[in-house]
Image: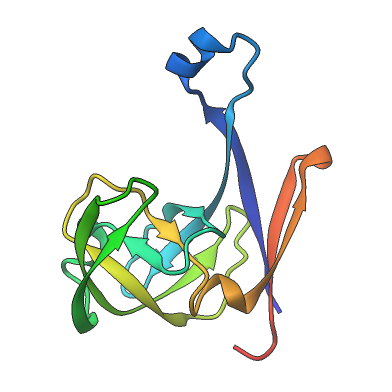
Length: 149
């Protein structure tokens, strides 16, 4: 069972909102390294427990062997705003800066046609295979892989 260390990123600020709320704290994001099958350079992804499905920007999947199942769309918090996507299976593994890595995982993803989005790791077929541990008091976070992948 691998343990993958995560990064607690507090570097992003909302400067416009800070003008209205002067003591506003930075945005917190949990990030992880992700290595797509057939690649050598890990990509930084947001660990998004609010995303039911992972979202992959076009630049990452366009030259990969991807099993596309359907055309669809994804929508966020803005009502009526939709992004067209392919839905398909992609393969990769979670990695960290200390050399820890998960087993390769095939997971269902929304394959975006734009690069204007962030790489998001969602629950379906991926994060649901790990226990998520957060210790904000110690600035630590990690994923612990189940045995039954």
